[in-house]
Image (cartoon, rainbow, N blue to C red; front, side, top):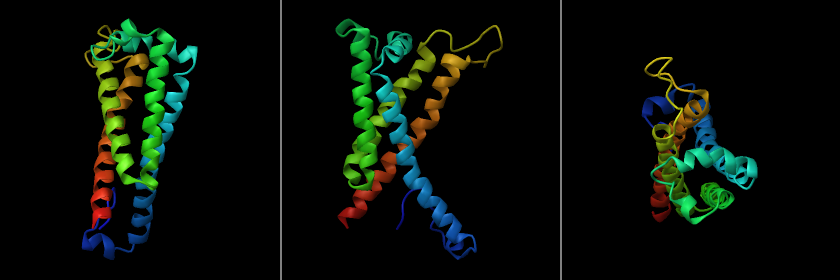
Length: 171
């Protein structure tokens, strides 16, 4: 039994395109973890800069889930905390290749992260452009935040895939 993006129907296995589909599935399965890991490493690393600390302040401060952080920590402190969590999530996601159990934790952390960051889409001023039209959103922060919806779904897939790998390892 395989997991991930691969289809195991008898028809797909007998297809002349089967080798390509199997290779594509393997690339997609591994690539999803690598891509998520890179995103978290890069974004997490950027949180250690003054530039990024200032850039996220409006997002974090306007969220009902994260605004309290500024009552406890400074602007750089909040950014470093978030960055540290993101780097840990990245490492746990990348651990998928050696420990599916660790990647379950990382993928769950990614899901939580993208639930929170996608909520910024609704709590941050300037996302929706009423003067342009009902569904119009700004490039920043609107379109920047909208991508988190896709990353949330990939993270949910990673939780499923990691849990499946843990179950297979038990057999």
